[in-house]
Image 1 (cartoon, rainbow, N blue to C red):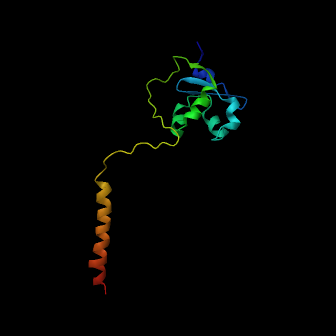
Image 2: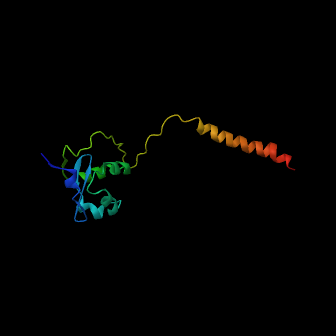
Length: 130
């Protein structure tokens, strides 16, 4: 069984010599990865000591990045600190989110009105000014 930590305990690890974060209710000590992180160390410091799940998923990390992350696993977040009711959209690097099918009538109507306005001006209003 792995160790369990409270979010309060994790929050005590926010320095360049001791950097922890929580992703999907798992606690990671990413101290040794600070210099190697492709997104820069500032990103890690911004999310240190707290639940970084949303930031992690928003970026769209690759499967390789997720495998690397597991090397830094130190334990689980305790039951009291866990986030259980929030769903995250997992987006992998190189993937694009699905576009919604269909669309609003405004996508057609607004450009059509703009074209009609230009044509009315060019062929009806502009020739009268000569």
